[in-house]
Image (cartoon, rainbow, N blue to C red; front, top):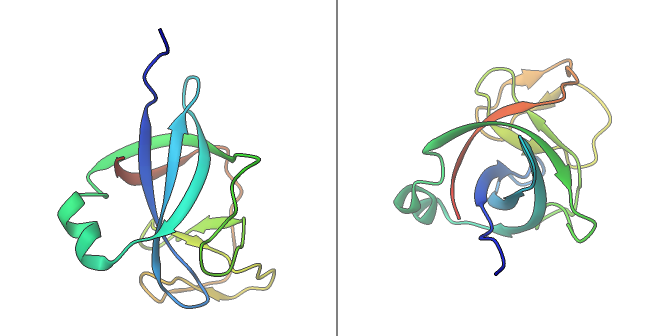
Length: 122
């Protein structure tokens, strides 16, 4: 009998157009979560589904099938140091960059192995 998959939805915004999207992550071992696919989400759906109800500390990595942000296809992300929300980086390698959630201008990035983020059940 196959074991049941544990999945969560990570909310993100595209830094290029500020549109909301979700990334479905599947739990692997320990705190490892694999980013499987992404899709646009409208604001009302986000609120009604409670996609930001759980806090998870996780090591996240990309599946070989992951296509990136559904709007710009970027496959790299950052967490805002002000609001703690996740953004795709739009393949921008320059700073400052503006958070698509809170509009804060970020001038540096800190590399980290794990991330604590709000997620909701898939």
